[in-house]
Length: 422
Ligand code: NAP
Image (cartoon, rainbow, N blue to C red; front, side, top):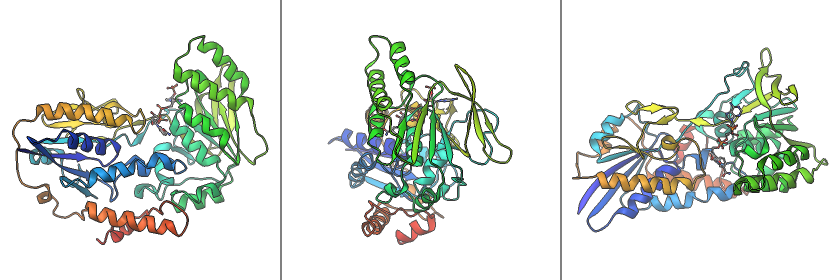
């Protein structure tokens, strides 16, 4: 029996699906001891810090992650940062293979004037803020104006716009950060624009997300019927299935406009942002449109136009991704998930993607190294193990039970470590 040691850096969906694929590739001739290393004191990556809190079903995949973690050959080392605490080169020496699964955490910017004004934020900051990510608790999110603009026509833009346009008490039974629920309850925002630079036929929203909009109980959703009809004509007689499904869902919204609610989410198509106006904070967005320049007055702009991966020393990066060949980076280093292929696809996309990379990795393995244990490297850190994380998890779920929420997330690192008994 050959016993290989594999390190996975990043405890998000791609990391867990890589671990699962390795577990599936174990047989009577080979086994894999998997160590998952995570920067935060908590695992689950985007499932904890990215998925919108009003989408609890998507988060049930965490059960799969926890099942993977119960395997006797799996260890979690959370609260350990690769790059500062330990280098990739050190891991490469200790392990037979190292897998980067660190995702894409940096928001792309528009590169237009005014983007650095107060009140102009990336979704890469706003989303982890409302999801209780410890690094984003103190983010300045001015919600005092009556209008917000979300730039981008993907599902992240849709999540952000929905969070801003919901009646905030709808967030009470969710695991939204307490500080964000308080801020949304005090918010003056009643109108949220979501702007796409191209027409409806090119929007990156997926149709289930569009189809849930008419079900919002306290929010008017506005799309211009003429915009959608023109897009249907442009899309032709045989549009792609996804495009047709999106356009059908959009037409339904455009034909059933509501106006009775205090809160409104309105879609603007063919609006290309040119400038964010303001002197010391955001006052509006200037767009170019087919019928000329248009200015939307607003006090908050959230940019949701995609992500790029953050660099780690010792890992080659290009165009916001780790340079790789079908997931192989160099020597015994591999990459999966958004860090590998860029920020696209839903959580499940990572499953087949990671499985293909793990097949390649296993086919390249020769003889196990057996060069000591990684814990030799953790001399100063407070490391959160799977058992410690389970204590945090149980404490959060218990705190949620009394309030009718799936959990109350702890935000400060110190509190999380205390809950873990560390
Ligand atoms: P995305 O789907 O790639 O959408 C990015 C959007 O930004 C596109 O509409 C793009 O328009 C626009 N954009 C890019 N550069 C721009 C610019 N300079 N000016 C104006 N607009 C610009 O990315 P995402 O929304 O970040 O989502 C990432 C992935 O996560 C997607 O696969 C998404 O489906 C997935 N996700 C899924 C869910 C869910 O299942 N509920 C939730 C969140 C995210 P162009 O097309 O014109 O470039």
